[in-house]
Image (cartoon, rainbow over all chains, first blue to last red; front, side, top):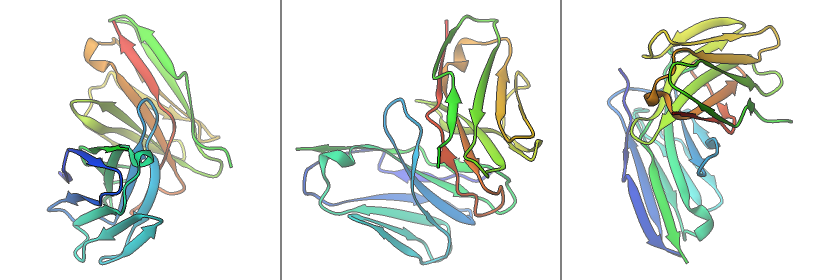
Length: 112
Length: 114
C-alpha cells in the first residue's frame, strides 16, 4: 500500500513569511501532483512533477520532486492572504490505473 | 475548454436510501476517477473508469458502484446509505489512466445522510 505523509498538518503565518510543505513516502511514484483546495470546492491542480530532481516554479511557489521520486516539497515565498487554503500532494503509481494517493493535507492560513 | 462538472452539488438523503451522482469529464478525457473526501480520512480513491471499463477499485464496500458511458460521462451509485457516507464526493478526469495520470477535479457533490 502506498502512503504519503504530508507535513505540517497546520500552518499559520503572517503575510510576507516563507514556508515549506513536505510530502514523504517510502514508495516510488511515477508522478506527483500538488493541489490547492478551497472550502466546499474541488482541488485545483497547481503542478505535476515527473522527473526525479525536477524543480518547477509557479510565481512565488517552488515545487521539487526528490531524486528517488519518493518525496516532494512545496515552498512559498512571501506568502499572501490569497495563498490561504488546503494544500494537497498526490502521487500516481505506475500500474495503479486512475488512482492518486493523497497526503492528509496542509491547512495554510496567512494573516494580513 | 469546459472543466469537469458534477451534479448535483448538494444532496440530503436519509439512511437506507440510495443516491446517484453524475460527472461529466473534460472533453477528450477518457478516464474518470471518483474519490470520497471526509475530514477524518482525507481523499480516498473509490474507483476509476476508462473507456467504459472499471480499471481500478479502492477499498470500499459493494454498496458503492459506478459506471461510465460511451461519451465518457460517469455515474456513481451508493445504495443503502449510512450516516458515515456523508462526505464530499469528487470526480476527476484525465486524458489517460497510466503513470503520468494528471487529474483535474470537479467541484464535488456534498452528500449529507440524516
